[in-house]
Amino acid sequence: MTDRPVPAADLTLAVAGRDRTDGRVAGERAGGRPSTAAELLAAVGYAAAWRLVGAAPPRLASGAFRLGADLAARRRGAGPRRLRANLARMVPSASPERLDDMVRDGLRSYARYWCELFRLPRTPSAAILRGTDGAVSGAEPLFAALDAGRGVVFALPHSGNWDAAGIWLAETLRRRGRPAGFTTVAQRLHPESLYRRFVAHRAARGFEVVAAEDGRAAHRALTSRLRAGGIVCLLADRDLTGTGIEVALCGEPARLPAGPARLAALTGALLLPAFPGFTEDGWSVRIGEPVPVIGHRAVPAATQAIADAFAIMIAAAPADWHALQPIWTADRPASPP
Image (cartoon, rainbow, N blue to C red):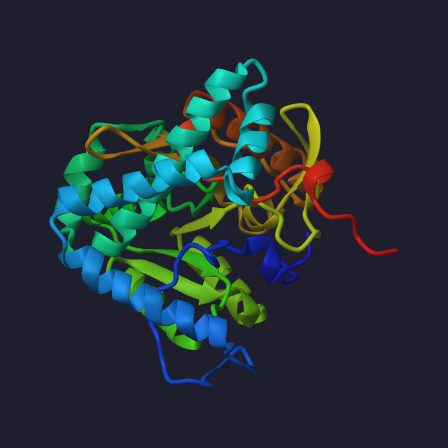
């Protein structure tokens, strides 16, 4: 097994498009290019949402987001149509009427994520801990690995409230007398102020966020955390670059990022699939069985095992899977010859 850098894109948390928060002056540069007018306008809009949604009464804010989700479901735009197609593959037994319900519920879940994200700075970590503790399953291997000084890699789909799950993890580590933090990877957003804003917001809650574009530096941060017996969390249900490993997801070809399995193979860390979700008045985290990965040759099989775990977890709570982009190979644009 060679100690070579894991391709940063394989480890991408895919927060681009989910976590945009602040604005800056026109023409600011991020990632070596000027920000576009649309990016700057979006940044201003998200900054306003942080202020307005955060200050609104909770019922008013959640009701407005729920109404927006229901309108989107009725309009059946590109995102809802893609979500419906993805859910049809994930739950093939669903009738057309059931699919309609799942799309509506899925958009409501996605809207709830956004509403909670904008209100998160005003939400105490202790409240999230209390709202999650009773709905966590499968955590025993996590704690056993940490007690043995072994690192842990979490592979997660885009589901539930990722931030709430991360805060639960950090606060649980603190409660157990461990450093309250973990490392993850994100694409650098445009404008740069968006990236700085969400990094600062999460750093205050124990998230160490490294930029995917930092390449070797990101790789060193991840491996250092794992070799020190810490935790790395990576979203792993979407191959953003086309360089992932081909798997069978619900019996059809798809590509998933290889980063989680590669890191586990490289460092000897425990690899755990996990599914953040919602409860009626809180949050849940379902942790799957550990995925064996010994050596680089085991990476494809481990990535397939992650796909199998995701299929089971998502089918059990399809509304909380926020898959509004192509997942399966057949749905992705063909590569140019």
